[in-house]
Length: 434
Image (cartoon, rainbow, N blue to C red; front, top):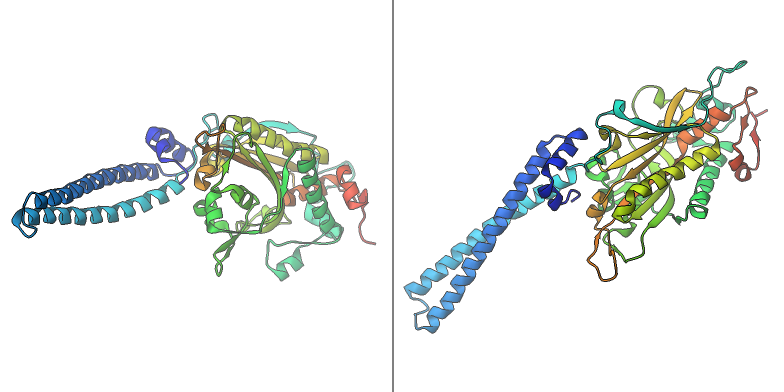
């Protein structure tokens, strides 16, 4: 479960409104409350019947010891009462199992209520928290900036046609300096996160089991967007968040061990890239892409500050790349099913003149931790309580690459390499093929 029964019982109005704010039906919360009430009623009835059956069994023994015949009417009546109680207990247990299964399924489908200060609404309610950098114009005094796919194809860095031939639309092939740029960004991101941000690098599997996907909330909310390996009941990861957060499923952090902070690179696979329109051009919306993810395990009192710190890690990367960006606080219907609070980092791409999301930084509170039973001891010997989990992209590559290509292209068709990446690429400029 994700929404705990205690929270459902004590804050039904908050949970109900939280569902409505995220675009879900309030009926799911009402049905969960109804099932919880019925479940408690069944448990009470079962306990009473078990006490009645135990009493009948005890009285049978007492009656025999006091001289009643084992096959006499008094004992027979007590046996009949015990048998009838047993039959009713079996019927109650069957209904209890049915009610419990439906309740557990509903609890998985109730969204995590957003923090109280998160704006309510859709895209129009998103708030721009801050911006950085100068947005370059598409029309320069003597030349026009091209979209990233034209820049990349001219420089021999991207081959969309052969990617579609090999696999299908949405699976790009990077070649030459394009492949080197991918590798350079991954290496540099991880170097910053491990060397400066104190994160431990993780290299996780690229496939996970159903329990892992359920733990972070991909199942049932986004199951239809995941690639499935049906023969082995496995899922290709949509983000490193899934395997890395599940590292500590069913575990207890001992007192003094938090925070725990990880950085991980994985290829990511998502079935969502199909909407018609501008996003299908180039690499703005693809089925397979590379991303470095940051995952944090924090004490509840520290999670809000940790989210600000996490978001700043992504911003630092964009500033060092020299890319103009903005930070959005997402509204309730934009933030997602499992998040309590979420920031998006959007970079400006002057070739297509659009803001492109390159990072989402989220605080889940104890929502994911409850699903995965990840706990910590506040002090030695104390009863374990749920941790708070957070994650953020640091960064996602396709749109970061698109912004680099569109921001650093030159009038002569060449591409200036951002200074921080030159040691990795071994050059300051990429020239068109002769």
